[in-house]
Length: 404
Image 1 (cartoon, rainbow, N blue to C red):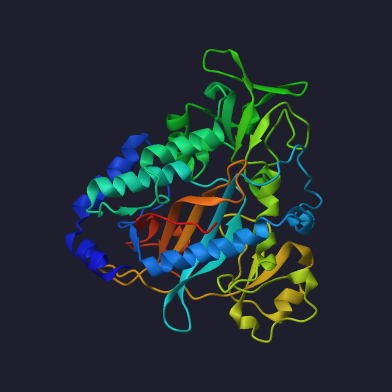
Image 2: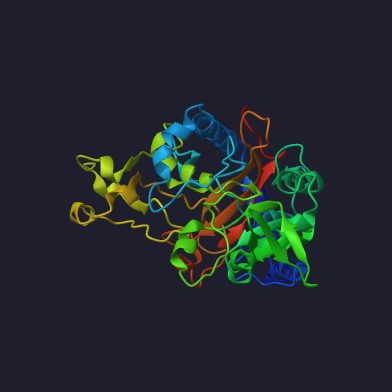
């Protein structure tokens, strides 16, 4: 987005550099992810960085309210159940912003999604290092929060996930992790932290104690669970045989408590009032639809990877929905094709990767994730046969900033 850096990058770009960059990503953990990785990072201008910090502060103000749990009490509803031992606040927070234009023609972020759940913290570290290794990235530009280095960033994650525990007693829990599109992040997490990547079906239970069997056939207690299970998927996988239930009391600490997956989600969007948050409404609470319904998108409250989203809806289609409590309407935003590439320009979405350390008043951004698109929506299925699209990262002059 910074014209001088964008033009320089495009001028120096070559397919040979790109292929070498990809091989570094693939070879680091001996794994080739199934999603497309973009040819380019994104260079974020300072005025947009300031707006992102303002947007995050507006949203944080709501999440930090003392009555936030009361505001989100209906986020966990039957057949879902509360998981015991919920902590005071989420440890992980993600905010997804589409990059658009305001009425003055300036770039501005618009909140699309929010998640109280971990994201690709370790893969984005690999991506940042790999882009820098193969392309000319200015030394003063960083994807991390101002003051963080790649080393201190990893140390921060280690303190949040492992702490003073024996890494062998900490597991990254997922559903068939080797089959997930985000598996490369799991292998990166395992490599940096020394923890076990474990399928939910491999968890053993004795009373309230959990354990797994290691490669030598020995029992290893599970004392901390780095929670990466998407409940939508878990609910759909009736074939899985689990020895434990998420809704039972266990002698293990959740790192990223499961309840925050629901409390901070699409359910939360109507709670925010900010110029950086499009208007959102619970479908079940609408007595009448907006007059400009064509400017709204329908989203299921509980889904992942963009499934179930409808861009073009009619009043008749909304009237036909039986489980109205499971949907919301959100005003559409228009992503701006602001990234000039050798071909057609690309649109982008940025996810702010955040941590909320115990004892601190709010979550802070530590890194970011970007997705580039030339299709109607962000995602591989909308960008077939396109270049300069896919997973990427943003570099900021001096690094990211936060508003306290």
